[in-house]
Length: 266
Image 1: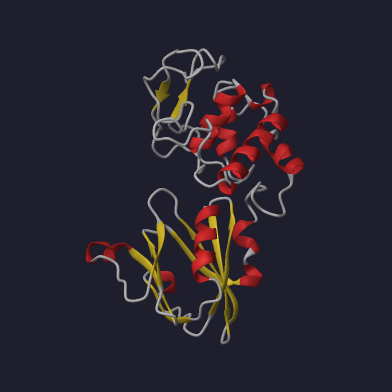
Image 2: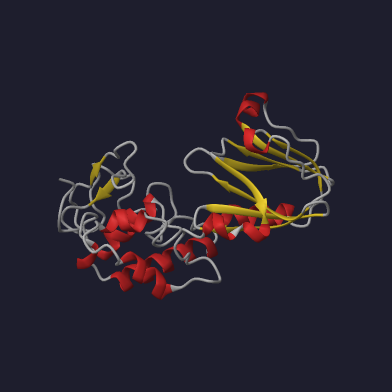
């Protein structure tokens, strides 16, 4: 999400909105025409796009991609393929001829920037933000001592920004079963490793979501997406359990039974 915000800023920061089209019932009458796009910020997986609107004052567009959403920027004269038009939730046309389209966005909220805090107040500290608070993240992660480490790391109210891939990789690199109670884990070391991985991923060209140091296809992860293949360290078969639909505590999980001793999914 951080890299998406960077791309949006590189292409759209300072642009004047010529026309806006919100295709969500809640904001169907919203009109950002004449507003200037100031910047897009992130908190965890949440995008916060701020505008200076001469009629309404500072506004923030809050969007979340979840699994299927996306943002795309089109150059002057470019249009989306017709097959994608039913997926458009937001369309912004800018004075320089560019446009931005938000597709399949499950979350679309337009609020006064002064009220933006209520959208993110529930989120934990984010290692990619300037207001990152390591001690607060550790305190929140350890608040429920018996909760499995993977479920705890995925809880965005404890520490924001870690998706399923990162959690699987962090557990492997720390040598702990994903189902180990958080009380039995060196949480500061876990937080520090996750922070280094996230920051390396967004600051190193070609290293997006790379945890092995090898960006070549099929070589970038230790366990994620490698079910049935040998562990890169010990050769043991990588195992996987499927996610349980509707249960945030039970996401798809990959692990090496030998390198990550401890409780299993049962």
